[in-house]
Each structure stands twice: as structure tokens, then as C-alpha cells.
Length: 67
Image (cartoon, rainbow, N blue to C red; front, side, top):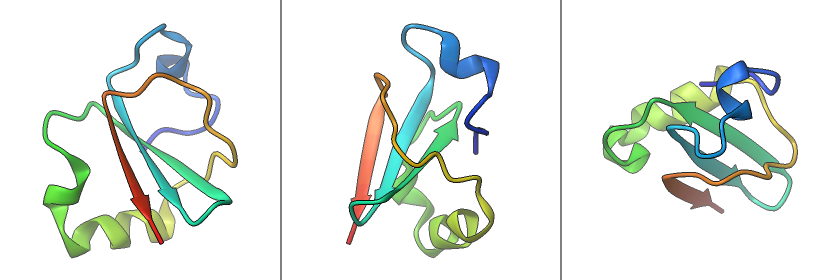
């Protein structure tokens, strides 16, 4: 997971996936080769301890929206 101030996010098209939870939580997964949903329940464990970004404004290779 990337911190909100991670330098990788400064690139025009970072190698990352955005995961949103509801309408108010956003997380960024770094160096994604496979879609994050492929992690299954482990993705939820990652999000439990991941740094939250609040609002994400970036171009991402992949995205997941959880309700």
C-alpha cells in the first residue's frame, strides 16, 4: 500500500490500483501486476492496516470499489 505522500504517486501514470470503500475511503495499492480482487479476503486484511488517502485523484491501472 502507498502512503498519501509517496513519491511514486507523483508519476503521471503510477503502477498502482485504487481501492475505494463506500464513498469516503480511498487506498492505493502499489506495483500491481494482478487485479487486487484476486487477493480475496487478504485484501480486506491489508485495508484494515493500510494508510487512507481520503480522496484519490490519479490515473490508476486498476480499481476496486467495495460497498
